[in-house]
Length: 175
Image (tube, rainbow, N blue to C red; front, side):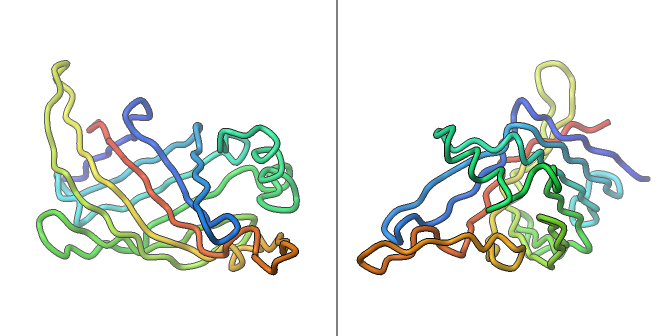
């Protein structure tokens, strides 16, 4: 039996971290996103995941930086308004750990990625809704997606690192 799970956006967050000046991390989130999973019964090791985030919803806490990230120097939100992830397979490592293989598409370029999912389980909330929760982590190289803007300081430090760490706290509602 196929089960559809839709993202509970009120209890989910999508984030990233990237090195700045190679000495600290800058964090950001996407405030507008959508995701769903289709499973066999309640078994997330059979899941097919789809996710998209609105590039114009990027938020790093600095409006000028957000505008720069939305510009053609980085995501080019005008031409490529969303980033997407579509799973191609799930591997169950143990009862709490899954690996999600799939393709992430950013700025019109699609690349394979493997994300780690820490599956927290399934529970019924006080309103009778069945929910599933997990934490996703992984990393990508921004240069793989044409996000190649860079600058170097007088001391020779790269301003923005190439590796981007991805994190997502996801809660799904069984339909």
